[in-house]
Length: 373
Image: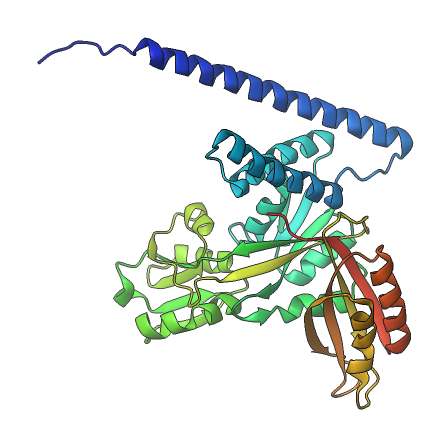
C-alpha cells in the first residue's frame, strides 16, 4: 500500500492564499466597525448621559440597505450568498457592535429553548443578554421596572390567531411596541420513549397543541394531552419521564438532550408566529413602519364604521384588527388595530387625531419598523 503524501497543486495553494487574505480583511473591517460603534457611544453620552444606544429605526434602515446592496452584488458578482443569509450575518455583526457600546438586556417567556427566545436571537443577535421569565405578564413587568431594556412577546400565529394574553397586557401597560419579528415555527415531538406507542402523555403550550391537533389525533390518539406554561417547560418535563413527550423546538431538543421522535408535526406548513418588541420609549420613523393602536367605540349602530372612516378617508391601510372584551361593561369591546405607516407621517397623524375624537377610548401602543429579518 502506497504511503505517498498528496501535495496540493499550485493553483489550490494560490486560492487558499486568497481565502486567507479575504478572512484577514473581513476581520479587520469587523474590528474597525466595532471601534467606530464605540466612538458613536462616546459621542452620544457626551451630549446625553442617558442616551439610548439601541435605535430600532436605525437598525432597520441599515439592514434594509444590506439587503439592497447584496441583491445588486449577487447580480454583479454572480454571488451565491442569499439576501436573507447576508442580513443574518450583518445582524450578528451589529449585535456584537452594540454589545461593545452597551450590553443590551431583553426579557422573554422562558425557560431556555422557547420559540420566544429564538425570536429574541433572530431580532437582536446572539450578543444580547437574554433574561427568561415565567409568564407574558412577567415580561411586561420586568421591562416596566427597567430590569430589562426590552421584552419580546408573541402576539399572533398564522394558524391559531391572536395571543389574547399579550393583548390584555397592553390594556394595563404603558409600554410601547418598538419592533416586530416573524418566526417560522416547526414543531418537533421530543421524548426518551422507545417510539410513539410508548408515549402516554404529551405536554406543550396550548398554542402548540392547537397547531398540532390533527397530527396528535392521527398518531397519538390514546395519549393524554397536557398543558404546559411553555414548550421549553414541556421539554423539561419530558426530559425526566420516558413515558412523556413534548412538543418543542430543535433548540429545546439540544438544550435538554432529548431525542426527536417526529419532526415537523405542525398541521400547517406555513406556520408562523409574530412577536412584538416592547420597551419604554418611542422612536422615529424608519421609512417602512407600522402603528398599533387600541380603541373602543360607543355602543351604537355604525360606531365601528364611523371609527374607521378617518383611516379610509386619509388613505391609511389597516393591516389587522382584533377585538377583546373591555372588562368594563358586558358586551363592549376594545379593538387592537395595526396600520401601515408611522405616527409622525402627516396622513397617519391626522387620521389618528380624527379617530381619537370619535372614540370612547384611544391609546397609541407604538409606531415601529416593519420586520426586516
